Image 1 (cartoon, helix red, strand yellow):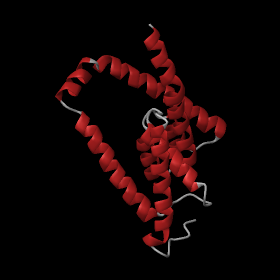
Image 2 (cartoon, one colour; image 1 turned 90 degrees about the vertical axis):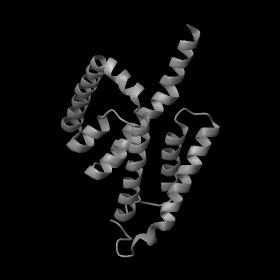
Image 3 (spheres, one colour; image 1 turned 180 degrees about the horizontal axis):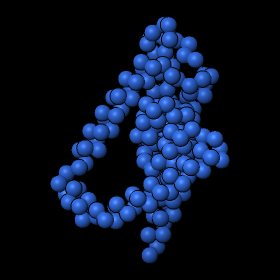
Image 4 (cartoon, helix red, strand yellow; image 1 turned 135 degrees about the vertical axis):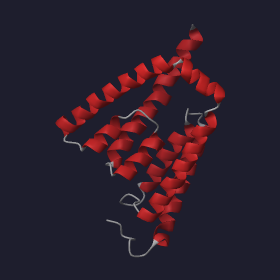
Length: 179
């Protein structure tokens, strides 16, 4: 339940400031520790830690939708800025292996989502988004808009990102440096 629904946007301004401060602190700490994807992973961890200080998730609809909209515009513009002619040319040359990789990921995603739905009685939207390949921020924003169980979706994606940047990436870097 949203305890501030009748009090308007400003009732949760302190809570929003607390979450943003946690995100900035987490990003700074992870950056100082030179953890890969420090800003993204650190901000998720930092805001999650800040959220533990108070009971209940921050769910004010007006604030949440506004922040999600701004975040999607920023993410879209950052991605769009990277799509220059050289990138599009590279995608054209790699179209067949990219299509095969995407198809394989979608088959694996569908299988894992089906397992979550049938064995663990998870709703289909949450199951698909939990298994979907993609970035934490994009999946989180999409999941919030579609009404997914965000705790499940974020837990799976943050675990995946942490495993990749803290385990897989260092192993691959060490392996490639030794060959």
